[in-house]
Length: 272
Image 1 (cartoon, rainbow, N blue to C red):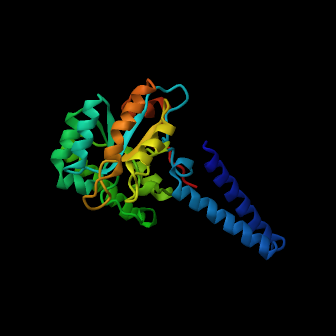
Image 2 (cartoon, rainbow, N blue to C red):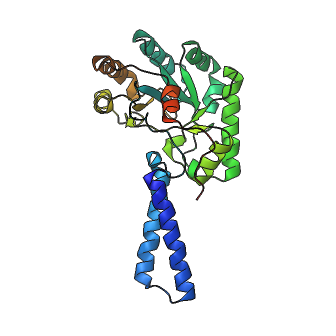
Image 3 (cartoon, one colour):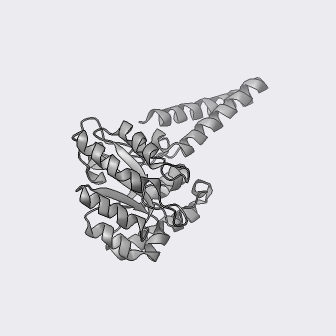
């Protein structure tokens, strides 16, 4: 069990015991209770904001010890210009990657998704609408979004995606439960280029990724901006990143190889 999830269960048990004590024996001091409540809320919020804590879902954030290879992943596409440029760069270096696509862009650019698949790369779901408030939505709305995104990919690819990365990496028990019921494996990352920011610079992105390159790493980059047509910094950083992979005698591998090595399967989300 991930440490953060164990901490959540422990904190929940303490909160229930404290509440029972306050009702049955005597109220705990107000200041102590307020601090405990604040700490509990902060813990739950950290689980929502930091996907790699794996508090609510058995998220794959990197390959296990002994895993070989680096999994490159790209979010927020497909894009009719930048995704195709990424495919060209990957082909030049004989590298493979996985693209976490948004359903509404798949509907707009189905030919780009076909190009990704024809080049031998993997595809995962990054939601349909890329709603920045996804973690605040109702279970019905989360399910509708994911079902719509899965359907958009399936119409073009001919099969359902296996992997899901929540928008902005935010998750909660509702998102974890719906993903679990839809047989989607939640995937995070161990290295983030932070290239999705408008202020990102290619040199800084490449340097940040280089520092995290090692066997088992899952690298998060972007092949498209969240909105609009701005060129993501990863496009110009990618040649240097791929050269660093080669220089360190690493290889890029399909994401499913690291997921299988981690032994993570759907239907094991946490439901505190």
